[in-house]
Each structure stands twice: as C-alpha cells, then as structure tokens.
Image (tube, rainbow, N blue to C red):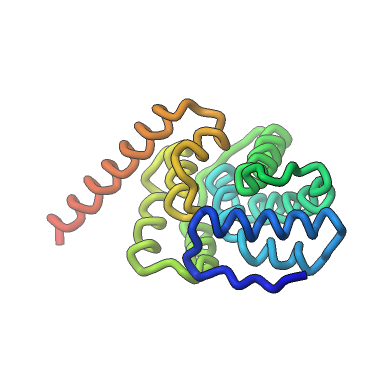
Length: 192
C-alpha cells in the first residue's frame, strides 16, 4: 500500500488517481486504503449527504453506510471510471433510501452546517462564510450543486451526472444560486 502524497489542493486528475488507487486496494480488502479513502473524501461525502437530508445524524449514518458499501462493492468498480461520481452515486442512493424510509425532510439547524463547515479544515474564512450562507439561503437542489462544485471540486458536467440532471439545468441553478448569495451579501453590506 502506498501512502498518499496528494497535494492539499489536488487537481481532479490527481484526486481521481489517488481514489482509483484506493479503490483498487480496497477491492483487495485493504483496510488501510479504506482509511485513506475516508480521510480523502469523507468531508465532501458528508456535506453532500447533509445537503440532501438536512439532518446531521442521518448524514453521519449515510456517510458510514457509504463507506461500508464502497468496501463491499469495490470489486465491482470499473477502473478508469469516475471514482468520485461512483461514490456520490452511492451516497445519493443512500440519501434517497433514507428519505423514503423517513418520508421527511426538515429544516436543518445552523449548528449542523457549522459542524460540516468545521470538518473542512482547508476551507478559507471566505469559503466558510459562503458555505454558511449557501446552506441557509438556497433551495435543496441549489445547495447540492454548490456543495458539489465549491466544496467537493466537481465540474458542472460531473454534477449533472451525479444528480442526473441536464447540464444546462445544473449551470443555471448554480449561477442562480450564486446570484442569490451575491444579492444577499450585498444587501447585508448596505445594512452595515
């Protein structure tokens, strides 16, 4: 097993190469590779689940179940694919299952978003502010798109695949979300 030497802000290619390696080693039942995979992507997976479920306990459960499923399904993963999209598809399916089981969504208390924000140690203060505003001001779909793009680093076409939405819809919702946030922040500055 190789120890990850991935830079603190990897490119999508570097991230995918590290994830591909981890998944390959997990397919051979490496617990160390599973730990590394968890370290590399647990924050974006948790954030994505949280944006869906709006409940930190459910998001924690989905995070756990996601990595159990990854471990169990790694042999079926096709190398050369898109590892983050594959993992986020698992996460999305688990979130939908959880929502069907509970048949509910609820408003999420701000402390749950703060908990997620604090998990992302490499966020700048501006990233943290954006994330906090994002979570409280946007629709569910807008929030998922912004989290996947801004926090997890996905390209818009990857987000379209993960959320099973047309690319133009993802782009328009992303830009609409940013416009909402910009207007909110400008309004706040005028009141100061």
